[in-house]
Amino acid sequence: MGAGTVAAIVRSVRDRDLMTRLGADHVLLAGHADLPARLTDVVGDYGADVVIDMVGGPGLADVLAGCAVGARVVNVGRLGGGTFVIDLDHLALQQISLVGVTFRTRTADQKATVVEGMVRDLVPQWRSTPCVH
Image 1 (tube, rainbow, N blue to C red):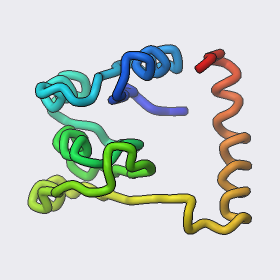
Image 2: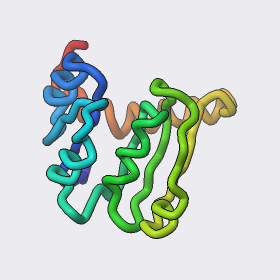
Image 3: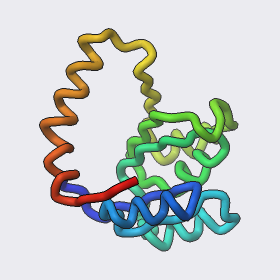
Image 4: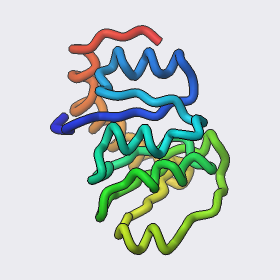
């Protein structure tokens, strides 16, 4: 889909194996004390340009620490918790855009539009990468 290096941070070995089968270049396990350093090893000193975060919670601090200047972080899930402390100085100095999304406030028509786009843009990719989860 045009991405350069794809890195995934997951919470289990099962998810790590799934992300590897789906084509992630690097898969890291969340919760390790050295996660920020390992993420820097993967994305380099430059940092990640785009992050899609499914977990939220305190782990989002590690994600933000690994972001490039001008990065865009989209939080679409809160499996790790809905709150944590954000270092606003880091957010401002790195010029990171943090966007939260949810389907709870979407109309049926808006949800249908998203599904149509997913079927058009993503399903062909999945068909070329068989995976059973």
